[in-house]
Amino acid sequence: MEQELARRWFFRCLGILAAAFIAVALLVVIVDPYFHYHKPLPFLSYRLYEERYINDGISRHFDFDAIITGTSMAQNFKPSEMDALFGTRSVKETFSGAGYQELSENLERALKRNPDITTVVWAVDYNGFLRNYDWVQYEDYPTYLYDDNPWNDVSYLFNKDVLYHALLPCLAMTLAGQPSTTMDEYSAWERETGLSVILQSYDRENVSPEPKLSFDEEDRRAVTQTIEQNITRVVNQYPDVTFYVFYPPYSICYWDALHIKGTLERQIMAEQTATGLLLQCPNVRLFNFFDQYQVVCNPDYYCDDGHYSDEVNSMILRWMAEGCGLVTKENYLEKIQTELDFYLGFDYDSIYEGN
Image 1: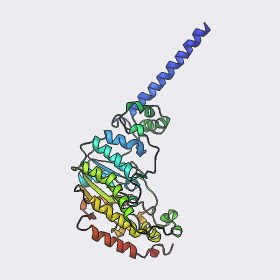
Image 2 (image 1 turned 90 degrees about the horizontal axis):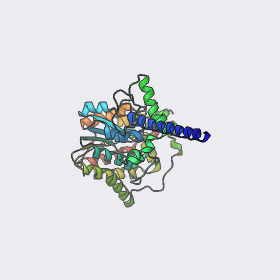
Image 3 (image 1 turned 90 degrees about the vertical axis):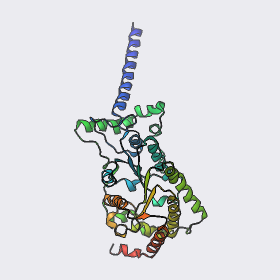
Image 4 (image 1 turned 120 degrees about the horizontal axis):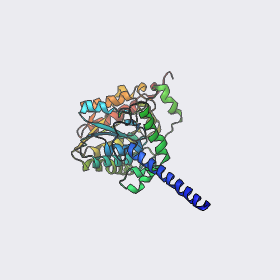
């Protein structure tokens, strides 16, 4: 008798546990906080905040014909502003700290899945030219969200982090009557700006010259591999898509650091090589804003030596829509020389006078 009761108790507990697991899995599928299975449900509120978990779902299920991509330099773009300027229906898929390869692979997946895409805005980090083409900063990736293999979805369906950090916040926002995160708000940040803020992370006194000063053939091969593997290869597969590619306008403090290191000319020669390769693609509209000195030389737009406020992101969209800063085969060598002359001859000490 006792054995029978114990057996019943065991199977009852097992049944309750199995039902709980099934309930959790069903809840994840229905809410789908990372949009792995479907687009956002209209009666639920969603929190968009984990780029490497959410971006693939945006590519799969959102309704759009344009995409903004890049690193943290692109996070403050407002797709609503792009739509007003370019007549698009855009989404934003940025990856903080990403290398060229990560951005390229995500964009390629989006283009394959969505034949409606006509326009891409792509922030190409200037400081990435001389890195390895497959350089990565983050290796802990939710790869189970990136493929179409249903068997590894167990990592999504039975994941305490998904439950606590994604699903429950969605339900809490819905019950509280809070709206979903907008695409303008997604990944955006707001920080203090100004020279005093920049100097909290940029210590020019500790910047020292680097041993390798000149741009050589090894550098040329590295830049060529990076650009061809990660940008032009993708661009050439989609000749009907217009790619608005731009180099983010880093602050004058970034150029100061290059000047102190003795690598400024090397970096600009890397830019020249990359630019020549990008201009071979007829569907690339390439922009360089390093001559927008009213921005670059104004620390009030920056929170560190590279990252600018959302005001600058808005300017960049307007500049591209107006054709301001457009680089062509006819003008790029002249622009490179002007850039070289300006940043080699700039009085960097004057930035810090009075600080």
